[in-house]
Image 1 (cartoon, one colour):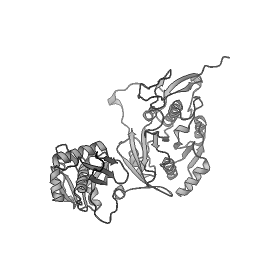
Image 2 (cartoon, rainbow, N blue to C red):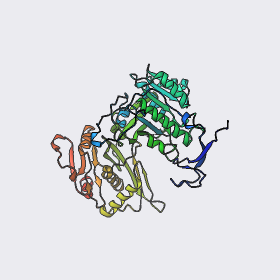
Image 3 (cartoon, rainbow, N blue to C red):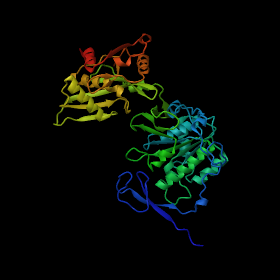
Image 4 (cartoon, rainbow, N blue to C red):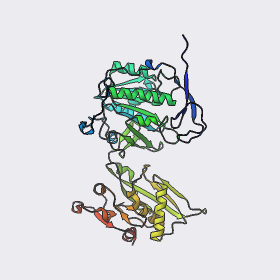
Length: 464
């Protein structure tokens, strides 16, 4: 019998685009020298069956689908279950959805495996299978001992071949599956090495088929590349239901779990953890860690009331404005968009008359998080002028307003949540746009609410 011809193709390692021949520049993403030859098929299609288990969910392919009028379709609310981790529940949109495929990405050593092992151990009311292709069972046992979480329903499997994993799944019948990591898995139906574009696509497709047909929620850990994106083809992020990013400074203790895609909830939620010797601790009140403890008042520090999803946060904005010593002024920002900072500097110079064009400006958001909420514009402007004029901002004061190009204060959303959070943390006054107070009953707040329409009015009230 003649041997089957091996079929190969070229794949872009950046975006996953396929080409029958090698290309110097990828026409899809524009990157150079990213095409690599891979074996795409050496087995007849009729033999490539990845998951043959019993179908529990509604995603079966056994019956043909037919079109329905949209008004005839019955709306069904996803039934969720508690993961025993409040921060993960919040980020997922209220709990784990059966049959969901969740991808968790992050830098090496940031704590992805620790997070998922901790979640697996906490869900002691569910049978969880933790599949690791990177660590041995004894290494995982050592990590679980440090966490001091005991579970009789957490099973550990060290295997990288998906077909062998599915055989164990059929025997064990887990209720939750964790894969660590997708780049280590291999399918017997693809001859390329683990971590290649074709292997990642094939193994992810097999896991998606399993999750949808068995209604077992599946968590996949993925590595990221040097650009901060999840390694592998972009189609991986399109296939999964939820994409989570686990961020943080490895030299710091706090970690942030952020949603970038979620078919079952909001993409603006945020979860915060603290890395300790015995695992990750959930931070229920992040405002306390985002406000540094100071023994004396300092210039250049202002508190902004921001919002991440439905969670209000009070964060500390730190600024340092000094005369440029080396010719061209420096502009540096950590945790905030430097282009928006430059816009606010131009507003302060044009509308406020402050000569900031010849000053070095350094900005930092305390706590190591990244903020995109325009509601901290006012806190940033106050912080900059406080440092420029060497005048301290009054204690127990916070700010929540967007600053326009004309120097006007614009209203922001969910003002009542911001006011309530500031009052709960003991702040005595909050500065807002006067256009944000429509329909708000201010009598129920004990905090002093100071509302203005222009930026210079805030400066006159604060600094005289």
